[in-house]
Length: 339
Image 1: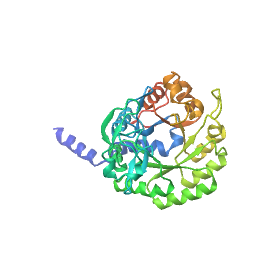
Image 2: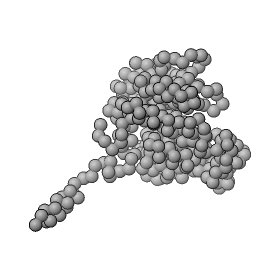
Image 3: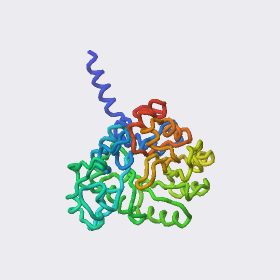
Image 4: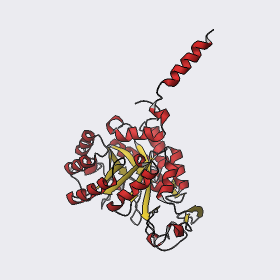
């Protein structure tokens, strides 16, 4: 006798709207934290540098590869970073260097080859020299791997004039809301030039300013930049410089004043802990970088240090180590739960 009531109840439930998290992919939950920094300052997001390629100080995957990205996505990162250049026939391809020698089995310059020619170049694992089955990917191909799972931070190696073209690739896949473009901003003139380039790209994507402490220290300038773009986060590059001892503070970009500006603007402070190609170890993160966290075994002096100084986004070559330490120390909140 109760069956009709149960059927009616099920029919009623079926007409109710589903929670947003159930309707959409994981990116909707990531975007909520991305867009609401002040609500999520107890959660540190992790960005896999060059798509995810290292673990425990060892290069295990070809950088900017599908395999590396899938590994990073499986770890639970919020974002992967990709480096983008252009082929001779005007297509955007994913490659860090202008030259092909370090990361593929080809030689020469990326811009001197067509996409078809680059498709004959196989990615290799730097260090071991292992040649993989993957060839140089296009931007569109890499975005298809991440769609609905994580955000993509595009490191534009070509300059502001190419922002619109890269956004157009994402828009063609219905993914403009899942990509973040960025440019270094260090003066009022540069701000005006980048603002014009962002406007040319049209709506629907997210732009993130890069601010480096060798050029900018004034929180007022940073506030002007973030207001110009309605930025949700700022990539803060904290250089070590000539310091011989590890600093006890995060520098001008992670000062109390800068954190106050970030809170007023409701945006995230992003720090990089990965090493830079062709520079000695420890030049980013004021010496508190991935090598100290993983090879030296002091993650609290890196991930913990930056979290305590206001960073809510860490871009790293060691996403596994970062996520594990942050989770163990209560600095990441589970997805799928309300805050």
